[in-house]
Amino acid sequence: MANRPPITAAIDLTPDVLNKLKAAGPNERGNYSLDVAVWENTRSVGGRAPGYTGSVKVKGDKDGPKGYASVWVNEEVSSEEVPF
Image 1: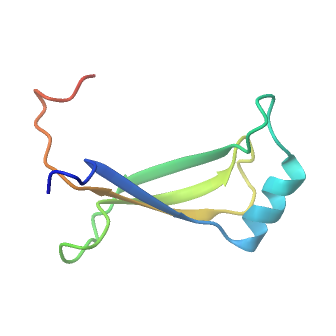
Image 2 (image 1 turned 180 degrees about the horizontal axis):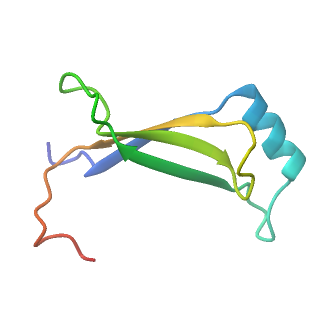
């Protein structure tokens, strides 16, 4: 599919994360910042499962509440095509 981006992602924020984000307030640019960490989903079953899963937290809050992240790689990219 030519119109699909090579990578798509979804985040699910819990009420606790939203409350913590509101309490933290915006950063110096006026944005609310989150940290996202994902790992390869080795338990993935079927073609629709995300290739990577992980957590979402308020930036800089290591022990705070967490949400959930899912990442799908929609196209195979060879190592020759990766720009880094």
